[in-house]
Length: 72
Image (cartoon, rainbow, N blue to C red; front, side, top):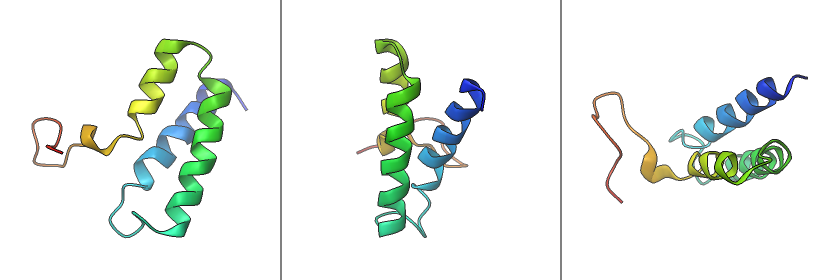
């Protein structure tokens, strides 16, 4: 699989674990664990790693009606 496609899979996992129906469930925890394993393999420099890590941080999420990051 091309490296860029693997990054897309990781980003998809980052998005899906935030879904209200999955957030905090064992399935979401496992999906995050798998996504973080992928992150370790494809984030081969500090800047890319920092960007990938930010994808797991829910404070950077925005909703459909939001203009920017959510508070807290």
